[in-house]
Amino acid sequence: MSALPFPEPPLTDGTVLLRAWHEADEAQRHAGFADPLCQQFSWSPATPFTEEHTRAAFAQDEEGRLAGESLNLAVTDATHTGVIWGGTSIYDVDPRSASASVGYWLAPQARGRGIATRTLRLLSAWALGQLAVERLTLTCAPDNAASQRVALRCGFVREGVLRSHLPFQGARRDTMIFSLLPGELR
Ligand SMILES: CC(C)(COP(=O)(O)OP(=O)(O)OC[C@H]1O[C@@H](n2cnc3c(N)ncnc32)[C@H](O)[C@@H]1OP(=O)(O)O)[C@@H](O)C(=O)NCCC(=O)NCCS
Image: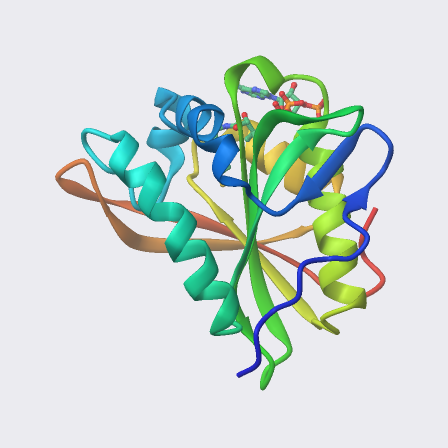
């Protein structure tokens, strides 16, 4: 598989700008993703979530990108792109089935302003256009109401529930699954 390209120019709607992660973002990336809500809804939470996990993420991002499997981007303020609002990714990229999955998180101070919706719109449009993906999948926990609202607002369609999908806090939890097909993005 060939490496995934960084979107060039970076994806922006004038409010949000999605760009490659820089090492200088480490402290903000850590502070944002270490937030309890991000950890609660991460599908591979680390307890405790340390600076070491964040440092390792930079190398893992590049590994996934070079393998053509995933692309992780920083969600920044378009007017001050050194300000990190969160992160977003496209993963499980499979050119044979023209499919991929998307995810996102925001630091607490960036929530409640429609930033995740803007982020998901930008990344989904790029995946459907530049990567020629014909199915985008989005999964989230059944109690993640904000994420489900973001998905629906962008035009994702709820398909159902993956029962007992993941180990979670000593038990297993269900996962809600949504998808977006070409022509459905809002
Ligand atoms: C999910 C997340 C990215 C949403 O981003 P956001 O830009 O802050 O989204 P908003 O706060 O604008 O909320 C989106 C919608 O959910 C609603 N909402 C927010 N919190 C809610 C809650 N606790 N219960 C019910 N609805 C909620 C908002 O009212 C809004 O509704 P609207 O579409 O009718 O306006 C953010 O909450 C987050 O980072 N959570 C932690 C990480 C995470 O869950 N990532 C997604 C994993 S699938």
